[in-house]
Image (cartoon, rainbow, N blue to C red; front, side):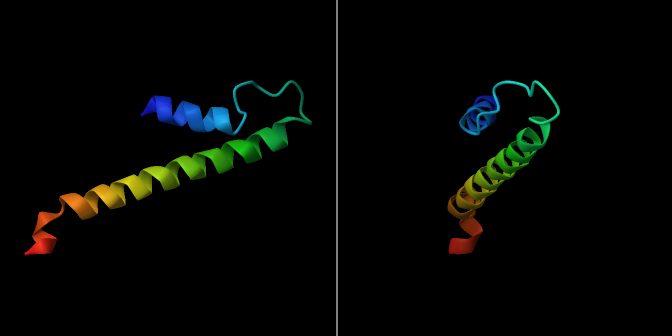
Length: 59
């Protein structure tokens, strides 16, 4: 799971740290967006797996 999170952060170009305060605000905004995307993907995966593995729904 950490590999997936690291890939999302790499896609959002968050591999390095900001060098000064002018780079900090865009870095934090990208970080917040990347975390929201990771949470949305895991929520979608859990919904899809819950749909397929909830066998009581089919009765």
